Length: 74
Image (cartoon, rainbow, N blue to C red; front, side, top):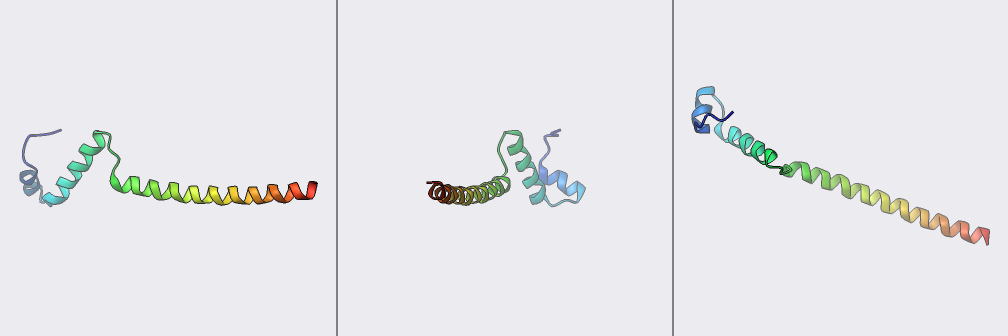
């Protein structure tokens, strides 16, 4: 719940680093606005790129296997 007080004032009372708390507040506002945190999207992109590479390798193997069996059948 927002109190309308500046972050720096609240942090001073609680003994917290205002930069850290401000980062938390901005991140939460972005999440509530539907944005995906940058770190999460980077990790997801890396995971998806890895999966694409795996599928491309599987596809290449299956093409070679199909060609091999087509030769042996004919």
